Length: 298
Image (cartoon, rainbow, N blue to C red; front, side, top):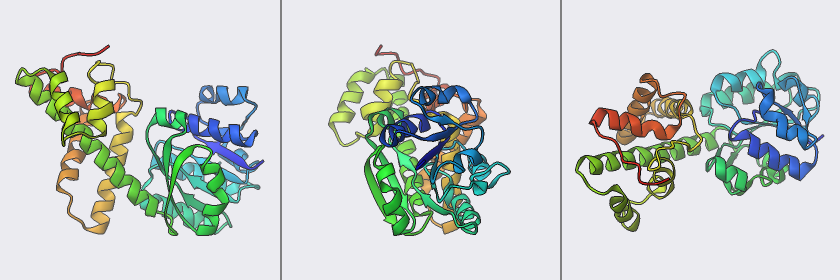
């Protein structure tokens, strides 16, 4: 069996599905067996542990929600490090340079290649196979795993030959995306407080120089209908900005705007919004401004 997949949550499930469609067979594991049901129906083997996946597949992908789960899946008691078939471990998550470097060193000592390939684009694009993959690691390993990555990604950008380089690019991307979201939400709240028709204001923004991914899609589709259903939990965004902050301190760079967004996300989770959708950041800004963005869409 060529491919295995660990972590089939909101992002992992569509990616695993596309690889399975490409390969026709795959070993899969998730702590929540209910999320692997659709893969089982497509004849995937549902493993009982990460090590079982790594004992059945040469290339194992991991799409995990936290650094702790990434470390456990990589080198924990039931980790892929003890697999008998694995040759390459591919990380699809935002885990930071420190964690991926640790796993590369530990698995490398066992003869297992580690390849860094965080993805960006969101859940719907993952299902549509239009997601973007950011790759870094040895060129030879990249060429080996590229066909499997192309099974789920429309664009694959090879950043460099060092594991961790893709993590930096992904963290910058995530921070810019969250900054766009926070800025757009603040703008909508300001307009609402001023008594302006927020639909008209949004139309101006999207016709002018202020347009961005948040104003074009996230806010109109997931906030102005008050559904808050983009699909990314706030605690994942908190994890991302925390890793970004760690990298900023490690490199000793100045990031004024990013630091403000970092504080906003930390405040949101402190207020209890962690389990909710990331677009509920709107509620935090609304609460602090004593106004609500009106529902203008169904």
